[in-house]
Length: 101
Ligand SMILES: [Zn+2]
Image 1 (cartoon, rainbow, N blue to C red):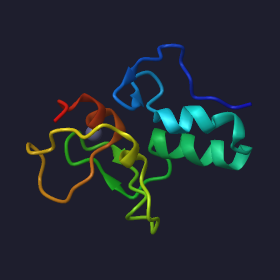
Image 2: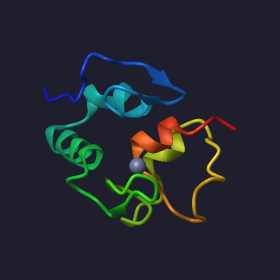
Image 3: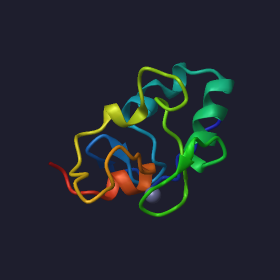
Image 4: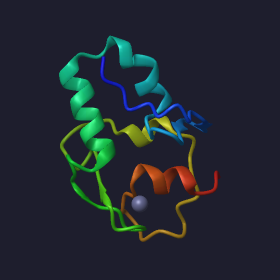
């Protein structure tokens, strides 16, 4: 089974600082099929991307922009995004590094 785990797992209020999966993605990982693994890894690594992160400029993936009703960021504890331009999504690494509300 594919896994992006890099054995540096640390739960940062809903997201793993090592592999940048949400706790939900980690919890459901063994129930997901290969296609879902490949897609999730592509989104985390910026292969499948909807925009560039407003903070660091790296490719980021927003599931809402991609036409879904849920996004990975809904799983996380809310961050203080007041330093960001309004209405912009940041990448997983940036969101994980923002202070909690
Ligand atoms: Zn970023």
